Image (tube, rainbow, N blue to C red; front, top):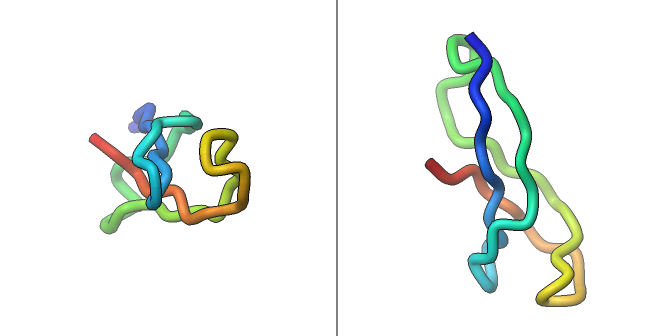
Length: 49
């Protein structure tokens, strides 16, 4: 089953991105390096609930 999740910036905490993941295949939280428009740089974005 696919689920929609939000990605939050690791530095400022703003939720800039959303994506879908396969909940059955993923056991830990998703982490991607994305651009944060609030920090104005590339940072690690982590999956939120």
